[in-house]
Image (cartoon, rainbow, N blue to C red; front, side, top):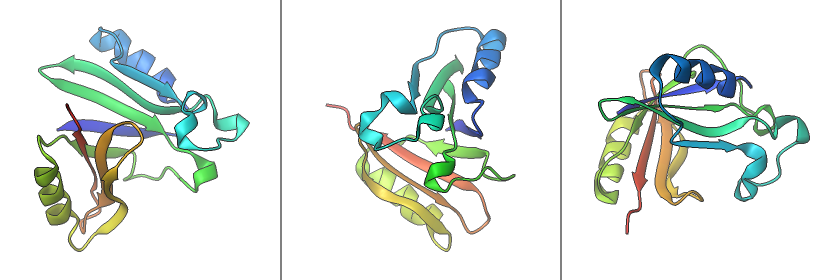
Length: 138
């Protein structure tokens, strides 16, 4: 499990701060304007972070993205932290997704994502936000 944080345009600033505390280097850092596969992004949102990851020790990664108002996103208390699960198989990803999302609200059903993973996200029946991300390793 890895914590996944959401920000309203200041994810990069926050992660520069976290990196100054934890040390290390970013494992990944993608801005919306660099991700053509994501579709059209308004000019004022192109510098927002689509995904950033910082290893913080013990096999844990602190990850985040900015919200995108043009996609209808709104940062509210409760959705600024998500739990990101990384199962070893598609079958385990489906099992976790189906079990935890029962009675909740699916945001993105499990499917092959443009970044090469099998991914889905939802809010469970208790209001906790989850992501399931299985890396399609060859």
